[in-house]
Amino acid sequence: MIKSRIFARRFFHTARCKKVDFLRKSCNVRTLQQCSQIKSKILFVRHFHNSRNSWMPVVSFNLSDIGEGIKEVELTEWFVQEGDEVAQFDSICEVKSDKASVTITSRFDGVIKKLHHEVDDIVLVGQALVDIETSGSSDDDNQDEEEVSEKVIVDRDDEENINLITKKALASPAVRSLAKKNSLDISTIQGSGPDGRVLKEDILNLIKGSDSKPVRKPTISPPVPVSATIPAEDKIEPIKGIRKVMLVNMTEANKIPHFGYNDEYDLSNLVSVRKDLKHEAKKHDIKLSYLPFILKAVSMSLSQYPILNSSISDDMENIIYKSSHNIGIAVDSPHGLLLPCIKDVQNKSILEVAHEVIRLQNAGLDNKLHPNDLSGGTFSISNIGSIGGTYAHPVIFPPQVAIGALGKIQVLPRYDREGDLRKAHIMCVSWSADHRIIEGATMSRFSNNIKYLLEDPSRMVFYLK
Ligand code: COA
Image (cartoon, rainbow, N blue to C red; front, side, top):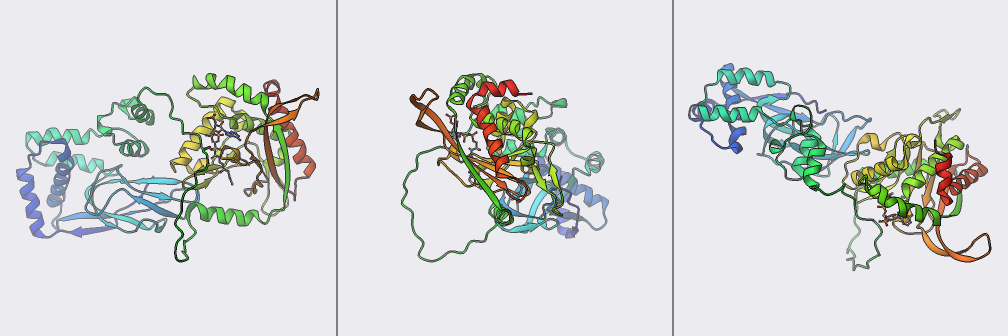
């Protein structure tokens, strides 16, 4: 929650006060769009009457602590410009940290007087984002506002409009922002929450109409050769945002001696099981891919080989065996490589895992992952096969100790037990483990266990708890 405080107060010239007094007397606004203006006028009248030195407060709206130890963010988009009127909960800007993107919303009604940064600037926690010439109201001082309304004499039409202003739709900043992004007027939406609160689902239902859950298009697409222009000069680009995080993490990862292990799994049975269950999953608005089965098989195998779901203590004296299987999935997004994690896979059904994969994938593509989604991972899987490629050499994401990369499932000729040649759906997997604490044999047994489960999914059903 943004916690900005009034930093500065600006005094008005007498002439301006006179102008407002005039406005108060002649105020007769009839349209809903003008409500905020009326509100400003009334609140200004408050200051005019309450203070000998008439003033309008200008607040410096600072970047507050957004948690997760985030110290700086990159400003990625302004939703306002100087001179714009804003109301509480209106989106001000979007900032991106090494963990997530956050839309910053206003806590004040007023007019934007100054933007303190340019897009792409790095803003430190505590630094000013904008100055807002407030109409005196923030979500902290609504009581003040009501007292003033009683004192102000307004004509009948204005009173009606003021009621409309006061009857602000109940909704969280995130829901307001979602509505705004989709050009929906939140004040006209009948919320399904307590006291008519507008919920995220209400907005999503409006966006999608009667359709089922939005599912992104598959990422596999044939490569299209494009004619690229080659720049005449070298270009220098600062490393920042997600790429900077990747740089820091991978530099750290380079200190780990990686043990690599590859194998191929015959997923022919899984291919037909998924085909059968796709229809079932659709009943739950889920587009079922292979990944949820694989993640569940990984979790079942981590239970048998918990050292792969561990980390080394900072003093390098202990192995910390993690109690949850929080499995990170590499998500290829336009903003860079992201690694959100599915929490407690050991307690989730395949359907629940599928739901999480879709949620994280969509949030990643929209740059809307929550910091919580990006923290706490204990093991990682990179499904590079959904883009293409057979093998990969995955790099461990510290402080984790192992990671797997999945290649593309390909139809290839293979001999069966009877020695007959048949069509098989083959996926190559590549594992990397921290060789300081994990033996190659452990990695091999772990991989064999996953292979055993995935090659005959009925075994998964048998051993599932
Ligand atoms: N082989 C063949 N097909 C695959 C596949 C694989 N390994 N993985 C997925 N597919 C198929 C899916 O079944 C789906 O097909 P369908 O429409 O017939 O069901 C299609 O490819 C698209 O799947 P996708 O939307 O990617 O879902 P997913 O659950 O398999 O994967 C992500 C989700 C987020 C992991 C994936 O989209 C992604 O971003 N992968 C890239 C990871 C990456 O960049 N790794 C490198 C890190 S260095």
